[in-house]
Image 1: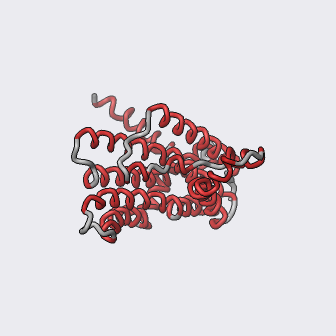
Image 2: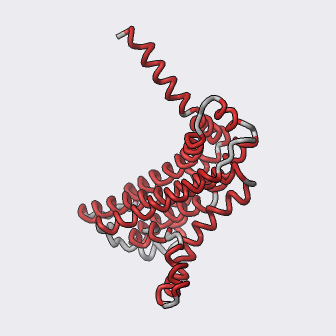
Image 3: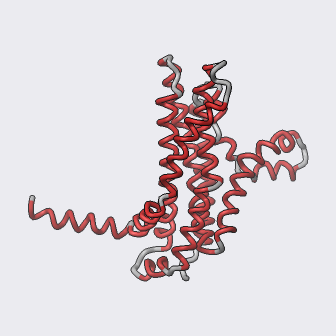
Length: 271
């Protein structure tokens, strides 16, 4: 047993060295502290915002309002903190020459790209986990069958948001190494706006139009509105059917793979 310890230590050290950029980026978020404000903000918004509704007259709306506030905050973070931090991280590591240093030590471009994206996506995963915990503890229906459907819907919601949001973080990181922070921030935000809000606005117009050009525009839009299941939470409509959830999840996985490859092409290592 004692003779195996050096080998185990060597394996752990190799793993840490392979993920050195991930741990370094994560330590940078810890040091700045804004990540903790991000998570604390979710708790504050979920607790305070529902109190602005007429819950004293209609107590039954308090729980749906809290769930709506929690997931609305997650989407707000995908419009603000997450893409900005992704863009800033990519630009900072490239300008400081750290990416070039890691590449000189034998790290592959793709591995560096994924590690930077993972460091930002960790906070998206933390937001999703915290939103699910809040909804389970404070918003879950009392009926056991409804509670099971509620938890299933939360799991589906978290999976869809992660599958759609993580590639946007990766794209922001890659663009941050190529251009300024503003451009790297605005590109994923514009994609998210077009898919989440723009598609909802244009849907009735484009779907009912017979012109091929309009149909092509509808197909090419990133349909992030499919990942927004807030209305199903608020009105307790239950989870998606397995086939519907699988189709939407596969769509976001394929779209995410395309955005990840696009970001990989835009990645710039040299300072």
